[in-house]
Structure formats: C-alpha cells, structure tokens
Image (tube, rainbow, N blue to C red; front, side):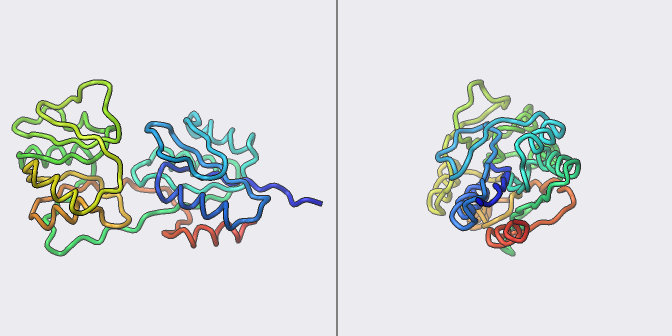
Length: 251
C-alpha cells in the first residue's frame, strides 16, 4: 500500500526558500510534495524544484481556505524578513487550521566595529535621517517603499532595482540601475566610488553580510539601516539543515 501523500507549503521568494525546496525534494521521501509559493512581484531567474504556486492568497482567510482545500500538512515561512504581512497571515492561518508552522529566519548581520551605522525603525524614519544628512545616497531598499523618500531636497539618489519601473520614480533627482544579486565586492566598491556615494540606505535583512555594506564601511560611507519588523511568535530556525530536521520530525 503506497504511503499517504504529505504536502508542505513553502512561503518563498528568497534564496533560502529556493535552497530549502531543492534540498527537501532531494532528501525527503517520495510521498512528500513540496509546494513553493511566490507573490509574483518580480521575475524569477529559475523556479525551485517541486510544485510552484504564484500569486496572493487573499489575506489570512484566503490562506486558511487554501491550506484546507489543498490538504497542506505543514507550512514553512521562508519569506523575506520584511514580508511582515504574509508572515502574520501564515500565523493566523496555521493557528486556525492546526497546521504546524516553522519560520526560517536569517541571522542578524555582524557589522564591522568601525561601521558608521544609524538604525531606524521604518522607512519614514530613514527618510527623516537622510533629509538631515543630505548628500548622494545609494537607496537599496527595493521598489515598494520608495515613496517614503519623495520630496527630500538636496539629495541625489542612486536606486538599484531588479527590473526597470514602468513609471518615473517619485524622487526629485535620481538615477536607476537594474541588476540582480549576487553582487561582487569589487563591483559594489566600484559602484559606490563612481557615483560618489556618501550615504547608503538599506533594510537590515540579515544573513551573510552583503558586499555593498562591506564596501561602504571600507570607504567610510555612513549607513542608515532599517530594522526588521517584528515577527509572529512561533518556532524558528536559521539553517536549512534545521528546517529539514523539523520537517522530518513531523512526517
């Protein structure tokens, strides 16, 4: 008699989620189906192995309905640290359905001791800090919250996006570059130097320290880092191996 099918939903959109799906497909029993879900905001260079689902769920209620209708057995929240809404919805939906939920979190960055760092709680606070400093800013926060920086005088922005926006950005003075990670240390250093950047704004996303941060510290460029939003309570791990072990313990 064949083993009962078990279905695992990975809420993805990160490199960690892609790697988890790849390892899970290779190491877990054949009766385990891996479903990777993406919001679909940006083009993906490559889909992870397993089943791919694209698009939103329709809030916590929609995700609750999906978990029941798709017979999902457990949920892995491997979303970006700043994807607070879907993490909150996952907590509510798994609580409503009784499904186990695991959060795969990135460890905090270990910043060099000589980093000139200002931590702020959100984009609005980052914009206020930038307005006070002025200068030539490398804005590497992504496309979703750029409007927070509109109307700041005496600041030139270098904005890096994965794809070119369809509409002009709501900034007074800026240039756009389109590129996709990973970025080498030499390339990041050259980018900062050639654009005469004197302040860098970034989300404190965690994980391995990005080359842009190391390059900025080396060039004595001040950092404005936005703290991660608070996460729902629940079990969390920081490595793929720990996530696989958690899954195996529930099969």
